[in-house]
Image (cartoon, rainbow, N blue to C red; front, side, top):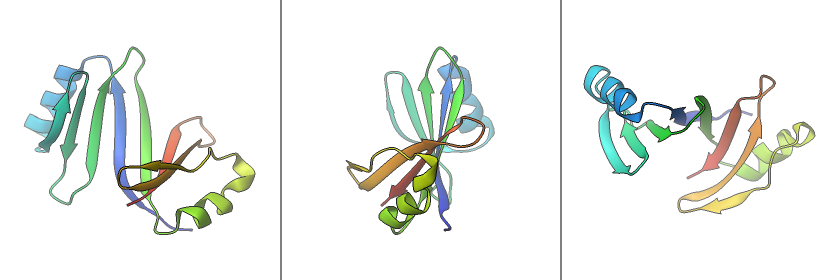
Amino acid sequence: MYANNSLTVIYCRDLKAMTEFYRDRVGMKTLAEKEGEQVLVTEAGTRLILQQAEKPAVTYAFTHTDIEAAHAALGDLGPGEITRHPDGYEFHMKDPEGNVVEFTSN
């Protein structure tokens, strides 16, 4: 099973500092913003979502063309239920170190 990294979510305490770093120093562009959240994008189209949170953490998202096959391939590891989102379908699970990983189709 192979999937492309399409999205990373960073939960951060200092949203302003993180936004300034990724936008102003790294060179990402603002795609959308709302209270407590910034959506940035690279020139290649990879999205970085910065979300205000008390405890820092990271979620990685991978795009897969056949979400049901990906879910089945990971079935013995306890993936969450496949749910619909505006662009397609997704499910979440944790990797062996406890990081949240999202698999999405869009």
